[in-house]
Length: 160
Image (cartoon, rainbow, N blue to C red):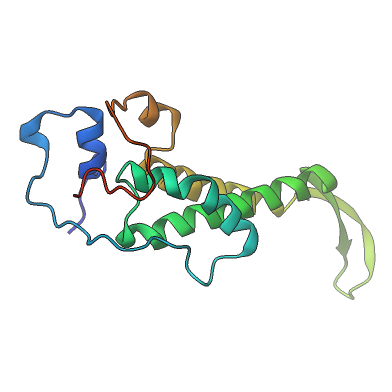
């Protein structure tokens, strides 16, 4: 069954945001404390992106073993967006394409949107979707109030 409206905020983020206690699911299943590592399929550049944020997100209780694939997808989208952006800088947003007649002979040229724009837009949309779920967007970050945190990446602050 599809739901409408704003997606449900993860409980850890709801707590960090200071949401009303009656709106926080206290019976939510909690993932066991396991080592959170990038999956094997993640490329080298995406692992570098992972390494810049994973420890901090784990320390805040936002990244758990159950979230590995979603966070890895965000890291992968970051790399794809960066690659597409570089290609667009080199090739330009509008490219010249050959035009052929029915016999397959080139008869001229036309201008078209660079296909890398599609790659960039899709990666950007995926990044925004997952970034919001992990509290990585400016609006989500502005709403955070975490109080005293140890900052130790090995602590599972909110899940015990």
